[in-house]
Image (tube, rainbow, N blue to C red):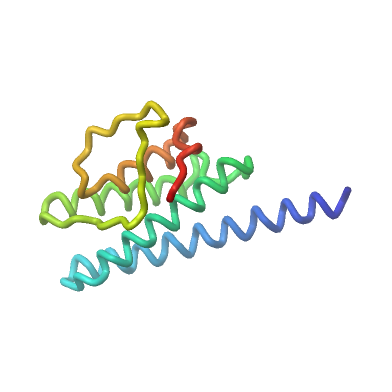
Amino acid sequence: MACGGFLQTLKTRICQKLLEDTLKDMEQRFKKLKSGDDESLNHLGNSLIALLGLLRTVRLNGYNLLMPQDKLTEDFVNLVDDIAHYCLDNGLEIKCGYKLDLSNLGISLQSQESIKICHIAHLFLNNDEKIAKLSIG
């Protein structure tokens, strides 16, 4: 039984590290984007997909990570919002090669298609219960 607790702790720590590394990478890519590196937008799109996968794993496994009061959650929310505003202000579109259809979850997004992935990440980060069942395909 002790082995199960150890594995759970290990999985949680791995997820925590992946989240921290994803945040750092996204912050660096966003700085590059703002300084004119258009390729960084593609990397940010991929990082947002990775973030959604991590968030889904955290929620479905009940890991005690990214709670609404956590600094890491706040940092992600602020960064995702900054990315969305920057893209809207500059006419940029975050391309997503994955289908992110929320209609089967009873969720209707009123955001522009160009930043849909940011809106979905924002819902995840704010602990929307339905969104954890999103399938990314």
